[in-house]
Length: 125
Image (cartoon, rainbow, N blue to C red; front, side):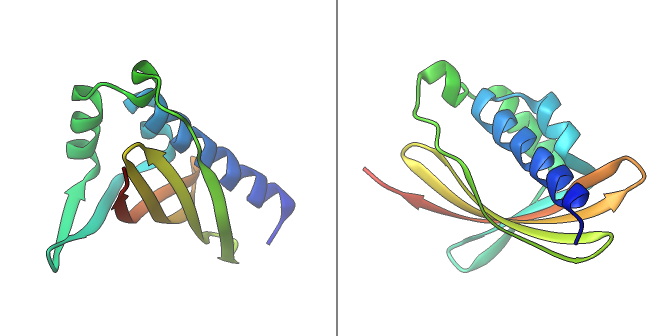
């Protein structure tokens, strides 16, 4: 694990956080590889959402920044297993939804990119 790689991974994660909060699919496009998919559980069934479908949803909703929602996102853990693979656990929120995301990253010719997102959502009052 190099300091340069960790800094680059952190930059990707902060771009991801900014894209979520601002509802900016262009920023999310920078963070996510074109092949990326998002996965979650709904009533015991795995949901598989391709990146482009998620981007369309992000573009269509009012973003958290415009709504004046509190922003609290943080990197909980980065595990780099080799020069080209890493896993990040992050927390973010779009109240009343609070997310724990597991982001798999690969170092590509374009730099570090998120290739998979598995997430859990908690609803709070």
